[in-house]
Image (tube, rainbow, N blue to C red; front, side, top):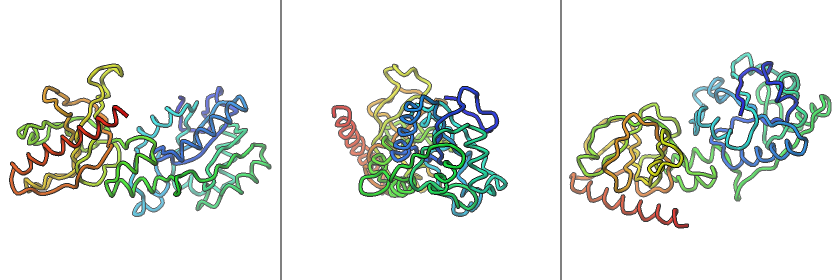
Length: 320
């Protein structure tokens, strides 16, 4: 997949094309439905497919106090978009000057002059241009005037529209299973394994601690079942993806004031040296909330039960 940031630098191989527009935070099932329709239109018209997105959420610039938490930072988002079969991804720098463009100015400069769009595929709720004043009807009128087809998809969802807002709310509640239902995959956090306080190893459950700059929205504090993938390992490596118990929290039993961390214990493995490796932690099921225990023995007993529950849940997924 080609990736570039300036509409005037669009590769000639991708002009003309079929285009879509969005923030694509989470690249959830609603986004994927639009992207699937984009690819289908590309096949129908025998044209390459291009998604247009931004380097940051527009609200992060215009109203930073109201900016939503980012589910999948740009690096993750771009990887997920590449997996959908796109030919190109145009990532526009969202500036205050850019935000002043009228809907027509945006469509002319990006879709028509930059990409040579012959067809634009969008969700029914798409908005664009100054103060989001452009909508699907605006786009259809511009399409008739400027010579491109518009395909508008109705909302996608199981009783409720799939949305990034819904995913954020579910992750804030720790409901990673319901979030996965919207995402179409387990939610993930990616980071480098760093040294922690080594309490897990002392208790018999050595954990991989993710760095503070890990990418991905961290769910509500609690214990989860999931998977740890070693991204530096070959895809066919035996120890690339392994079942794990995940702790998100601040270690209240030890009265610490640590930042909220993500720690993953690979089930039944105490022989792994993961320090400095890039790993992806995927959240499959919520086990319990974070609790403060009165003694280390109580904590160890709870961790033993957590691991047993994770082993049971993840085994069902593997055999399903």
